[in-house]
Length: 363
Image (cartoon, one colour):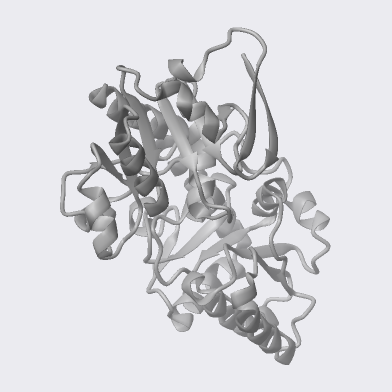
């Protein structure tokens, strides 16, 4: 087994204890060359340990999860010039660039790229995509923008980590928020995530439903400070400072606990690659009202495991949320159905198995 120590981003230490393997024995390198934690980081972190049970894989870069070996940049020297192919699985342009350059310099890489983007790609991305040996898209919509063959593999979620609480009322009570129920919206606080749409809807609904409070869980980056300040002004003007909370960036364990405190989850993104929070919230048993962005139309069974609304439409969001706020028991039932759907259709194990099958096709 491997025991690994995390130092600083890009300073990762590999320590062998028992049943060791060297870098030369690797099948897959999972790079994460982005210093800021993002949705791509989150999806990568979740599936990597599952992949490591199927193939010999190592993580290169920051935010390494438990359950996968970690390597430093200098460990790459151990695979230079070997004959057996090695998968380099990129998820960003910079990771594709590194893979293309290293292959040109003699590394035996087979290049894989996962694309979640639902938009036309820049010329540099198109140029890089043409040099990949295999492409994975996280939805049919993402695949339609790639202009080449891709395997569609939807993201999954660890349903043993993201799960309903033993007692949702007790979980909510831990939050310190007033009332009995919480509505949440997770992700970086910015217009693209529809944070303003969520706040506008809450300012209209919460005065009518005193048992509910609302929470935005996510980082406020320096460039979004003025945007967040405007949201706080709107909240204050509505007299809801105690009932609409912006947490800022939290540790992943705290985020997972916040999911368990929710009765309803509002996915308000204007545009999104996949939208992992959709299935995280459903796995935790929250009723879902989702904008038609990212994978929402794939994930949600309209009226059964959630409700769909147009992106950026405050009126539609209010209309979809209000019946669930009027009837928390209906929200509970919808949340239970959502949990069942995620367990059946969006497991992390299924995602890992399908990715491993792509790898096997290359080597």
